[in-house]
Amino acid sequence: MSRLNRGWRSRPDLSLLTIVLVLTVFGFFMILSASAPMAVMTSGDTLVFVKKHAAVVVVSLAAMGLGIVLSLDRLRSLTKPIVILTALLLIATHLPGMGHTVYGATRWLKVGPFSIQPSDFAKIALVLFMADFLARHPQKGWSLFKEQRQMLLPIGGLLGLVLFQPDLGSTIMLATSCFVLFLVNGASSWKMAFLAVSGSMAVFLYSWNTEYQRLRWLAVFDPWKYPKDIGFQTVQSLLAIGSGGLFGMGYGQGKQKLFYLPIQHSDFIFAVIAEEWGLFGAVGTVLLFLALGQRGFAIAQRATNPYHQLLVVGLTTLIVAQAFINIGVVIGVLPTTGIPLPFLSAGGTSLLVTLFGVGLILNVSRQSQAQLRLLKRGGSAA
Image (cartoon, rainbow, N blue to C red):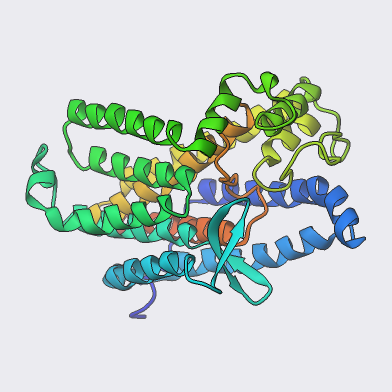
């Protein structure tokens, strides 16, 4: 029992589990629809992409199960090795013969027939580090930034390595999680607001002075001015969304996935959802992510262990932030980032890490249930 949660008989949060399973199953069927034309063209097999995704789903659900029963104390004790290993994997993407470049970004490592994306593991590593550090150093105003400098190297190192890939979208997502964790740990609201504004300005200036990022911003400002080059993805995505109307064209009946909309079964799958299920399907998807966020923060609020609270807040923030960054890109209010939609997009390590993170959240919910049961028993005995 040393490696497993001793409250394993307690039931996890069924509302959160249901939301996650609904999103995962829906994602499976949307990948089947969105990937079919590309699958036929590349292999002659309509199911080639969805077969691979099915294997990823099985492994990822197993990872979620592991996250549910894993000892959080044991996991916490491994925080430092996890951070170091993640940093080494991020560095390895730039080593000759190891890194795999796609669309100009070197974010992957080839492992046999599969590719893994170390920046996905950075999500878990950074949240584990932040939760552990902040739980051991309860914040008093702004003093944490002045007194605890040892936290800056792991945070800055991981963020810098992810940014260097380059992966600005994931960097923003990780920074957002750090920001929320600092905020809930007691940092001054107005000072954090100043940090948010200055950080946002720094990100914009950095991206504006990077040629390919500047072109992506131009595509956001007026995609219809560049419909055949830098605005192509956004234009095709908006056409797909507009074609869906209120109720959609019907499952499998979308037209933009027929070699108009790029990366349709991964980064732009929300556009396929909007086209085939309409406004109601798109809004329903957004509401599911909002409900997931609500359940996650409710679990954090019920937890009595500060480390558990921070862990759940960090993981929930990552999932919800990733979802809304992806949706922002698809609807044309954010520049293209290459971030998949959690549970719904095809992508091996992204789904694996996300479902493992959900397992950790459910783990905390079970422990809270077990503690509540013990308190009730104690109250009854009294």
